[in-house]
Length: 362
Image 1 (cartoon, rainbow, N blue to C red):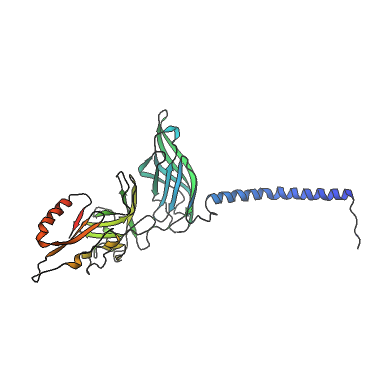
Image 2 (image 1 turned 180 degrees about the vertical axis):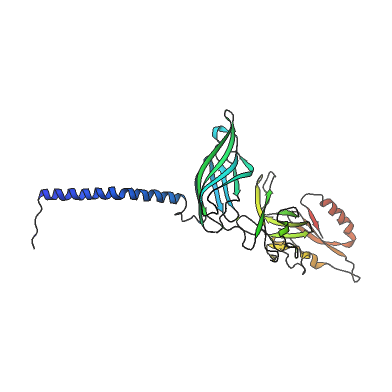
């Protein structure tokens, strides 16, 4: 088999053709590759390719704010922002309205929400805003949205200024309202003290017939279908102290609330025939059950709890000689009172009942 040797001219022509082919390849596919890279960067910024998107979120924009949290579930969309340096050296700014556009993974693509109570922040302060008309009805679903935060501030030389700042957020939806509940109402607890509350602490909730949701409460076994929970669906330990035809008195075991801050919790309602009572996190005072202490979860609500009703002593003629006494001030102090000292203790009760956060029970 013979081969024809290539001369210098042939080699030059072959090299030229190869160079031309490589250049044509780059011109043909270069733009396509560039477009793919740009699209991939955009999708990554939205969290789609982020391996930790199930436990976090991504955001961009929103100057002078930094988004510190972005959550979405069947209760609504919740965003937390931290205020940075305020334009024109203003002392504070006020968030008035939030617009959402191009939303995916939510129950709507566009929405606007005017804050019932506008939020005023100084540089370095943060706030959490719940937008109830935008929700993610399924958990563990990717969502993304473009948002516009409208805020205003007053500058010494410019007067009142209203500004819209835009950005993009994305994340994965979380669990919300427990599936056993058919409806719910928000309850806002505000700590107006100069220091944080203890962690945990006991909060009394007086739910009255004038409050939204009252008609959803089971009356056959009062309160059996009521459950309190946080935004993320975590059930809050609750203890029904007592009730009348116009109100129910519950105690909740709540996590700490910082000074000057608020916490929104929810009271939910299952069908009236559903019994949620148990001895773990949905309970009632021992005397309220048809079987004494059947649903008493007080030990899981109060820091210190002792049920003394089991230890009452009676004389042969039925006269009660000792009385159980419990005093609550975020803890329970309990004991048996001798009958001959009852008058003295009743005077103590009248005194303690005038002090805030004291509840005295027999």
